[in-house]
Amino acid sequence: MIEALSLVPKAEAKQSMKDFKSDQEVRWCPGCGDYAILAAVQSFMPELGLARENVVFVSGIGCSSRFPYYMNTYGMHSIHGRAPAIATGLAASRRDLSVWVVTGDGDALSIGGNHLIHALRRNVNLKILLFNNRIYGLTKGQYSPTSEVGKITKSTPMGSLDAPFNPVSLAIGAEASFVARTIDSDRKHLQSVLRAAAEHEGTALVEIYQNCNIFNDGAFDVLKERESAQDAVIRLEQGQPIRFGAPAEDGLGAKGVVRDPATGDLKVIDVTVDGTAGVLVHDAHTASPTTAFALSRLADADTLHHTPIGVLRDVTRPVYDTEMSDQLEKAVVQQGKGDLAGLLTGRDTWTVVG
Image (cartoon, rainbow, N blue to C red):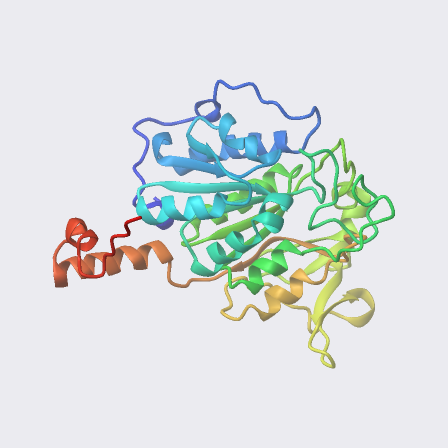
C-alpha cells in the first residue's frame, strides 16, 4: 500500500474502471478534453486498491467541476474557488479518506487563488487536478487568468492586457511539495503523473493542459502534433539528462537544457553543436526549488515552445493533517479531553442583550 494512502481502507475485492463510473450521463461538449481526463482517472483509480466509499472528489465551479458526478465515489460539487478549503477540512479531520480536488484555471486561479496557495503551503494530504484550457468555458468564452496577452475573447474584444499566471511557477513559489504538468490527450503520461501524485505525502498539484474545442480549440496543438511536439515538449524523467527534440547521434534529443553561467537562468542549446557538457540531469527531489522554478519558466507563454511536462518537484516536508493529529493526541495526553460545554460557558464568554 502506498504510504500516503496507508490509513485509507482497502477495497474488499479487485476493482475495475467500471466500478468507478457513476450512473450519471456525462455532459460536456462533444470533443472536450475533460472526457479523456475522466477516462484516465477512472481507469487509474483501481490501481490504488481503495474502498470507493473512502475516496472523495471535491470540485468548485466550472466545466471541470462536474467531475464528482461522474465518479462512483463520494464527492462534492462545492462553491466557486473554495474546493481546496473544503478539501482541507476533509483531509485534516478524516485521515481515512483519499481526497482529490478537481478545479479549472478560472476556478483555482481567480476567485480561488488564495485558497489554492494556502493549501499548497500547508501541505495538506490532498491531490489537486488543475484543468487548464486558458479560457472560461462554462460562462462561454471569456479570458481567464492563464490566457495569453492579446487574447481576443468576448470580454476582451481588443485583446487581453493581463499577464497570465503560470500555474506551475505559482505552485512552486507557494512551496508546494509536489508539482507536475501533463496533457489531456497523452493518457500514458497523464496516468504516470497521477500515479506519482497519489504516492506523494502531502499536497500534490497536477496541471493538466485541457482542450476546450468550443471556445479555445487547438490551444495546445503545438504540444500534441507529432512534428511540432518534438521541438516544443520537454519530457522530464527523474535522473535523466534534460534532452528533447529530434534524436542526435547518441539517440537522445538534439537539444538540451543547461544553466547559463552568466545569469544563472536555464537555456536551451543545440547539443550537436555545443556538445553535451553541462546538460542538466533532472532531479525533482532536490530540496531547493530553484531549478524546478527555472524549468517552469522555460515555456514561452505565447508559443508554448520549450514546455516541460512531467514531475518538476517532489520533495518531503511535514504534512499538515499528520502534524495536526499528532498535536491533538499530545494535548489529550497532557490535558485530557476537552470540555466544549465548559469552554462555551467559561469566563471569556459574553452575553449580549438588546
